[in-house]
Image 1 (cartoon, rainbow, N blue to C red):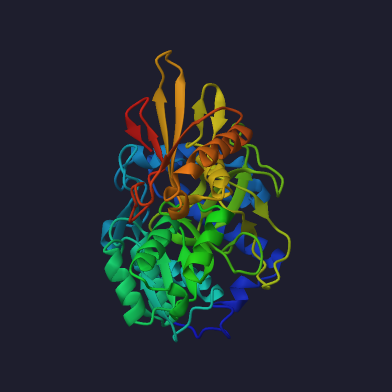
Image 2 (cartoon, rainbow, N blue to C red; image 1 turned 90 degrees about the vertical axis):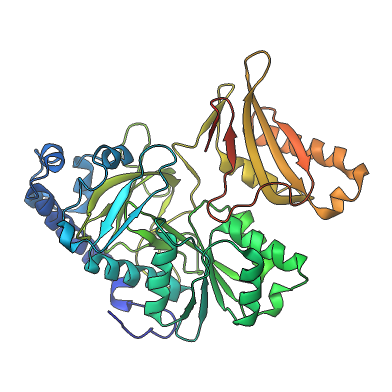
Length: 442
């Protein structure tokens, strides 16, 4: 499905600017149709889960709150293909999560699903100005992870020249960025910082290159980290949100005109709920994002708990798009650390560190056990080259970091200042937390 780019602003103007009333009616009818498909599928899980649900009684998206949630555990319990609605002969691609915390979560796509995915993610690329005039360097991982192939298909659909570098070989990434005249980059935020570091080490000023936009996702990114990337690379950052259980990247995209990322609500219906009670929260309050994807063929989803903490924003956006926006990911319900009885989110630590002059945006949180069997929180963070070269500055910097973290977290953390380029770099999602209390990485 190829359509012309609409003046560099919209990919699908009708869908992206649909009046709110029409959008809600469309969502309601699509959820109804999805529920009918699920109930008639003959799959025991859906029969049991939806036994008390009558699709025709769903009169608005508000009625979604009457339906049960779906979780990642449901996917794992029916591993690998037990929840697919499309028969095997119609499945043309399979993706899966890494499975780092158990069996991988597996999703399947029909040809129509792949077209829908590319078309939806194309909206986010066009919102960031990508067109057939661009060269899009795709440094997301290509494989079972949904990122690389998702961006490849979407950028190709828009008409950009795609350079499928995948992650890794960073010196070569920089060389190709320069030699191919790359204008847009896709990768994780932590890898974008690594690319900037390698370019600087090789004496290449990225500000002198044609690159002007970076489409970053797959891991949380604070405002300070976004600003750091823009400053170091000379690009505008357009944050992208997605998860394989819903479809992959492209569930929501930043337009650059205001806070947050537009959820493409004609295809993905967002709710924000209290993580404990499951009750829906008013717009603007922080809670867990719940998503429904009723239009997928192979694996439609109703009320999937993402575990991501966000705010839902419905104020009109200057860009003209009428869909709701989600804020940056403010944390996850399953990455909250409990240290000596205090709730700690890694995003809190990152935000605090990036506000301290003299530090680089590379850190690790190490949890251990003290001799008295109490939890120990240790934060390893890189110093800037300037501080590393002047040993008399380190004690003052360490004291400032300790005090900053104490004020933010309400507990004392041990701080270890390391030399530049000593924290491991990641070509995919960065590993920020080492929980050595249980000998597990998170």
